[in-house]
Length: 162
Image 1 (cartoon, rainbow, N blue to C red):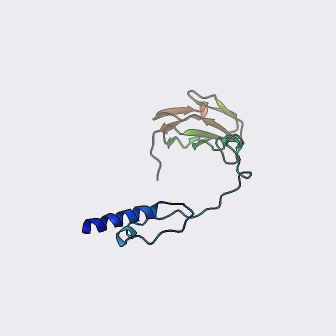
Image 2: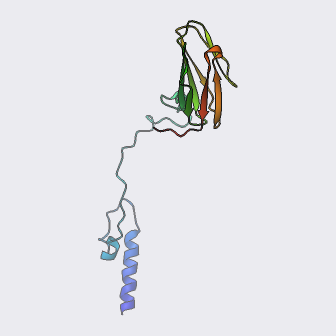
Image 3: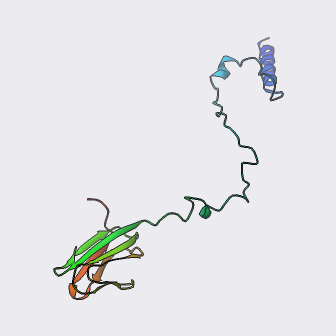
């Protein structure tokens, strides 16, 4: 008898799950089933087909505002000031591999040229500040030469922080 009652209950539960999606829900499930209830996603408005461009109508990421290509590469500023007293600071440490913005300020009465291996020389007239973006460097020590004004050292591979 218990077996027959279980079979009937099973068939009724199975049939309750079948049927038209638009039909009214069947009787509430057994207490054991309600403990395993799942959350249904919140309803969201769906725009009409005419308002949603197809994949072929969507602009490329580069053409969208804030899309690909709008980002600027991370770069580290490295600033040297050349004066009658020499080059300040005499050494600058930065992380390795990040692009470098080399900034040279000429506080002398004569033109100067900054030279760093692998980079076009950077010339500055008296009172002028010049800038150049250069590729990042592997960890190491790179001399920056300013002719008669002296030299400085660019050290890459230094951890950022105080």
